[in-house]
Length: 382
Image 1: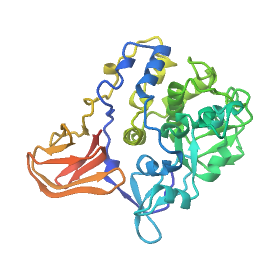
Image 2 (image 1 turned 135 degrees about the vertical axis):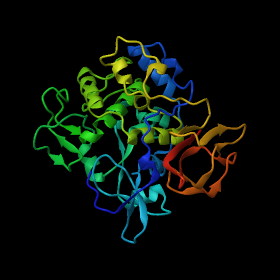
Image 3 (image 1 turned 90 degrees about the vertical axis):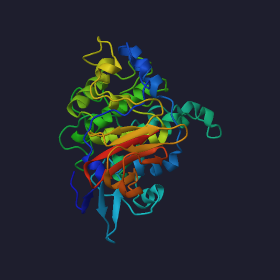
Image 4 (image 1 turned 180 degrees about the vertical axis):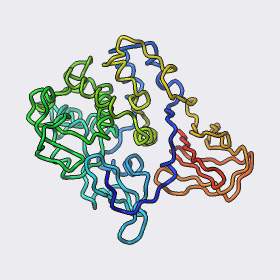
C-alpha cells in the first residue's frame, strides 16, 4: 500500500509471535469433529457475543481497525489512521477525536463484508416491529462482518459477490476492483468485487465466519450467488473453491491476529478461522476427511478461563488473574516501563520497576515496552 504521510512506528509493529490468545476451553466443542459437525461446533463456540450499536461502530474501529503507525496531520500532530481494506486513502483520527466524529468528517461508510441485502427478507420486513425486520439480526452489527470503508469503493462494491475480474474492470482504485467475473466465478452474476491480493485471505476468513455463525439466515437476493439456505455446506461449491484458494494464497497475517484480539475485547468473541488457519480445510477442503483436535493445531497458547495472557519471548513479566483484579507482575529489574492501551494512550509509566512489583489493569489489550528490553509484550486482560 502506498503511504504519502510521515509514519512513526508504534511498539505493536514489532510483535511477531503467532500465538492464538484464546481462553482455555473456548474451543473444546470442536475437538474430535470434522466437516459439518466441526462447522456446527465452531459456530456454537463463537456465536455468543455482545451486540454493538450499529451507529457507534466507529468507536470500536478506532481500536480494531487502525494502522500500527501514527501519521502526521497538517497541524504537525501525530494521528491514528483507519485501516480500511477498500482503498489506499488516508483517513486520520485526530488526537482526542471520537471514532464516530472522525468517521463522519472523513465521509467514510460502514460496510457489511457480506451484504445485508443477501439475508434481508423484504416480505417479512415491518419497520414498526424490529422482531420481523431481518436487518436487525446480530449479523447487522457484528464487527466480524463490518469494516470501515472508503465511500467510493463501497458504492462501487455495492452488494456484488466476491470474485476475480476480467481485464479493464469498471471500477479500479488499485485496491478494490469491480468488474465482469473471470470464467467459472460469480455463478452467472454480472459483476464481482475483487479485493487486493493482500486482503483476499482476510475476506475469505470473514466469509467462512459468517457461513459458520449465521448459517440459519434467510439467504436471499439475486446477487447472492455465494450462500444457500442450508446448514451444510452453506457456501456454494464455486464459492468454497475460490475462498479456499484465497485463504491458501493469503495466509493469516499479524494484522488479522491483532484484530482478532481487539474484536474479542470489543464484543467478546473471536474468529476461529484466524485462530486456526487450517480450520476451513478441515470443514470444506483437503482435510475434510480428517478429525480436528485443538491441541494438534500449530502455534497455539491458550490461557485459563478469564486469565490474562502474555506474548513474550523472555520471562521477565508474568501475567496474573486475581479474585477481583487482573494485571501483571515484574520478575526482574525493568527500566522505563510503559503500558499503552489499544488506542495508543499511555496508561502506566514507571521509570524503574523491581522484582515483585505488580500492576492492575482493567480488561483490554495492551502493549508493554521497557527501555531495558528490546521486545514489546502484548498483554490481554479479559
